[in-house]
Image (cartoon, rainbow, N blue to C red):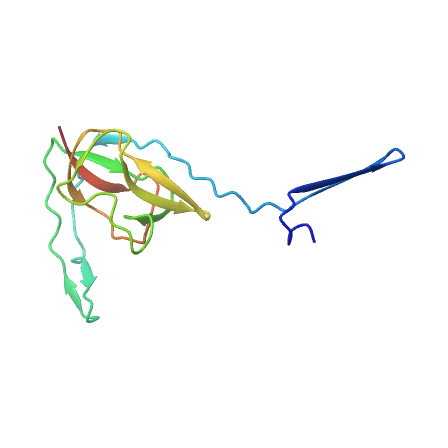
Length: 153
C-alpha cells in the first residue's frame, strides 16, 4: 500500500514498540566513468595468414575484406577498459558521441560500454582528432580492445 501511495516513509510508535515502513526504492543505475588507457598503437603483423578475413554485406553475401593498413606511428589508441557492449550513442535515436574528424579533449565522452546492465561512459584522456572508429555500434568488446584511433593535437 505504501508503494502505491506518495508516502515515502511511515513510522508508528506505541508503548515501547516502533514500526517503520519505507517505500520501496527503484534500483539505482550507477554510471561509472572508467579511466581509459591511451597508448600508441602498434600493429603486430602475423608471420603467416591462413585465410583472408571476410565480412557479411547487408544482402547476406560474404566477401573478402582488405587487410587493415598499419596505422601511422603517431596515432594514439583509445582502448576498452572493460568487457561489455560498445555503443556510440546514449540511445538509438540520439547522435553519436564522436564521429571521424571530431576534435576531442580529456574528459569528453567518446562512447558507452554496457557491462552487467550498467552503462559506463568512457572518457578520452587525450586531446586530438578522431581518425578511425574501430568497433561497430552495439558490438561486444573485450578488455584492452582498441576502440578509436586519435591523431594527437
